[in-house]
Length: 428
Image (cartoon, rainbow, N blue to C red; front, top):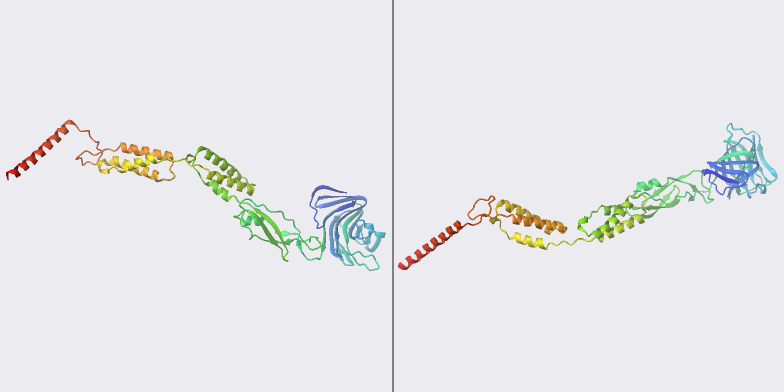
């Protein structure tokens, strides 16, 4: 049986592993097997008679079998097997226990570790153990010949550990087999950020669907991506022989939302209810901005809601009628009639009121304040006395009775002069 004891990091280009007998399980990068009798595990069926079979095995006693070209997943139906048994290396067929070649001079590894390499080229089979060739045999037509079949492992009365199980064929690379998931870069990622998420090496295979032992370098074309426009982009990667693969890159951007949030609107300029709705949309937009895993849909929704709330802000209507009327009245006053100090203060107030009146963004409070200041300045204007040449602060005086008599005498004197002049003309 096969039991999962830990994460499967077993390095291989094979699949479809299935135990036929014995105890088999993966422990990280190692396949562990044990059986007091015959135990077997099979993987892919190899549809070629030109390949290399490689694996690392560790064991002390008992028998190991490295199976290839098996007609079925029952070794007794016919197969080739390289067998290690003590210092014996044997190439044989389980069917009828038929031996093709054998040697008894295997060097026992002090650490009990053996690297197995079996090179199959048609009917010629060359087997090496720890880099030393022990079998070099051509199977004749008079012998049984198998041109394709399953590969697998066998044990007998032993415990064994296996690593790095690869079948390498000479088929040209026709496909990239790495499974690259869709990429979701960080919000506002640039091209360098995206490039860093893409693999630089990929697994490759030929038409036999067996991954090559060596990975291939891949280069990516990011020209299709516009980082300023969020969306789903298809990015193409190419290896040396021109074989390509594609991966989806889903980009996100919240720059437009950030710009909209940065705009300010003064609460006193808008009605209470419309500004309340604006604040709700603004706060939600800020939450989305501060969340790293916000989806583009959430970002776009927050933007749309905030934009709509801004469009629905209702300005408080500003009435400038009274201010305009006061400015018109004040503009008719003459500087020569008033003291310099009070006129200067009045003129400053008039200019400020005119500026507020011409300001399209002025609030009602600003309009009312400007009107009040102008009214105050007008009330504080002080007139200049008749004949007074002093440009200082001269309070307009109240006229007394004596001053009235002086005026009357002046009128009488003027009339006397006129009468005298008319009398002389008659005499002449």
